[in-house]
Amino acid sequence: MEWLAPRKAADLLMAEPYRPALAPRIWQVGALCRAIADALEARFNPVAVRGEISGFSRASSGHCYFSLKDPQGQIRCAIFRRAAGLMDFLPRDGEMVEVLGRLAVYEPRGDLQLIVESLARAGPGALFEQFLQLKARLQAQGLFDPGRKRPAPVLPRGIGVVTSPGAAALHDVVTALRRRAPHVPVALAPAAVQGSQAPAELIHALTALYRLGEAGKLDVILLVRGGGSIEDLWAFNDEQLARTIVQSPVPVICGVGHETDFTIADFCADVRAPTPTAAAELAAQPRDSWLEDLLRFENRLKGATGGRMDSAAQRLDVAAARLGRPLARMGEQRLRLGRTGDRLRYAVRERLERGKGRLLSAESQLKHAVHTRLQRAAQLFDRSRLRLELLDPRLVLERGYALLRDEAGLPISSAGQTFPGQSLRATLRDGEVALTVTPPR
Image (cartoon, rainbow, N blue to C red):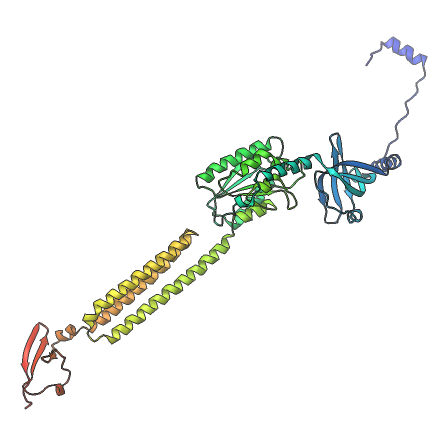
């Protein structure tokens, strides 16, 4: 800017008359957008463009949206439902296409966009071509071999998660795990999931979780992130990351992007999940189903235990009713009942061992139920033993009665079994007495 002296400025004012500059036209925003759209229509349309697809999506209305790009720039595109219904293939991110359409301005946002009327393939895009080449090379080297892949564990001791701490995918995974298996510990190994530094961070995070897997602290690893364009997911197409995944000591479940997204990591992982939430669901079976199984097992075990105890009690009752000489048979029955109790305890212990690996809380409940049953059996045994002892002849002898036997040792229970001069032996409380039968007076 040049500053003029007062005298010089006055001379200029006197030399030339003042002429105000013309003011520019003041536009309404909508009118300006329409004017730009009219200018584009007159200058360019129709227009044919060649470029690489990025961020392709289909709305519920049937309209499709994406960007066309090349190294120098990009432009937003829209295919309305009518034109989308005429496409003979489903466009994918990274594909090189040629489109025919018209330039327009989306007035509510003032955005320039290309309204596509027709779309045709023009060959693979640069990124997509790299993806196909790497996929073919790794497949030839056996990294995708189904024979080396392992199923997800049914009851993992721990679950490792590799993703960005701020990603929505982490929230989805944690929510699913908390709902299905809140008792399983989760180890988070944070890493960037997008950008040039992401592959190295993902490899470092996986390596840290591998050490936990080798130590037996976790049995499965989830590699997850949300959806995005081929550029957003490109970190999961890294060759070194692929080779790291196949070296995992435990199964790796890859849940990257949406169901239609595929990365090299998906092919290398042991299990491919369509979304992060699905990856979490594959890694943790719902707790409720296991609790239902344990409840059914507990009911069967209680039924089997009760049946055995009832059967043993019935056999004991029958034996007690048939005993002619309780003292001679009591020890035998005690041994039989002892063996039955041993078999029962062994059976219960064996069933508990089979169920022990599932949930420890159920084991304590089962032990309590078995202990209660055994206490009842012991009480039943004590009552039976008491009844048998009440039948002991020695108790009768204590009250002044005698047990008569003939010379052959057979018991005498009526006078009709005796005859005069017969020798008998009477068993009293403290010994035996020899007797001779005399005729009745």
